[in-house]
Length: 346
Image 1 (cartoon, rainbow, N blue to C red):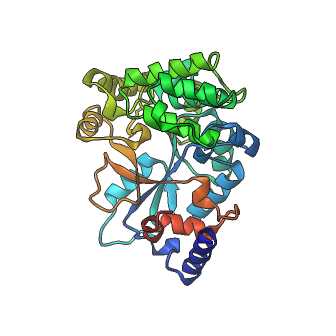
Image 2 (cartoon, helix red, strand yellow):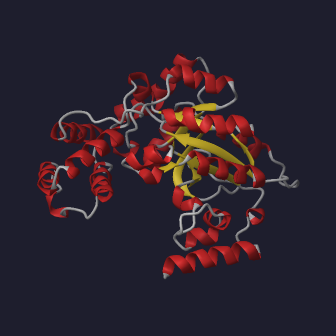
Image 3 (cartoon, one colour):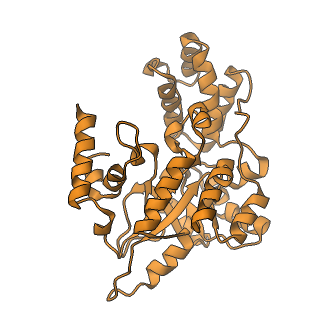
């Protein structure tokens, strides 16, 4: 019953104008977040389908965003936001289009849509993963856990016992199993996270990787930059910065920028905190490393005066774009963008 009520409420609020994007403050900066853009068959294989939208949904979302917002890279929109005249209203609010993780599907499936619409975005990449063409640690862990879980409850129980998670029990579905372990890993020190990855891969019989999966190459990143897109740092190894030692933090933040700039021969001015986790120490490290701005995963738009090193974003997930019946919904999309939708927990 509740899903039906939510759909009904989102339509009513949209039609009445309460959640229409035109009501959003024009002096605010919005930042839209995408992770993966995958065809339906690949999305169904991926251990974190909630992080992926289909190319159809991506195009639909981008068309809506470009109708109501002035869209661009984080660097470009930040420059316009900083320079705006408080006495003069912008024609449309600003919206930065951002992508986390440097996944190959961004190049294969998102770029053609953006080319067709003439929209540029920012792509945040973990340097060491791109250099090695190695999946991010949570993807490596996720694929291994799926194989272990599918081999039987006893195998999954043995894994969680070795990781010290035996008391949490066996979840009811494989996606819950993946989330259970990965969420626990996010609270660990960096070195311990990679030890867990190794345990998962050993118990699954070796590294698991989908045939179509991969990261963008440096040549592809250079091509994106030449076409007007922005390349930003997403650390060296996608480590959770709040769990890093001081030397590790320097490596993930400053060294990743230095290497990325040297490899691509272009300035790297924007940073993205893995998992959105940041604290005073990591924010100061990002500032000192020479970045101009950084994004978190805190939800919302950015009012004048918001710190450039703790920018809020809105995740453009399938749930944010579709009704509970599974259809792409302008009303649900507007609800997601609105403060009303956030307060209601959608």
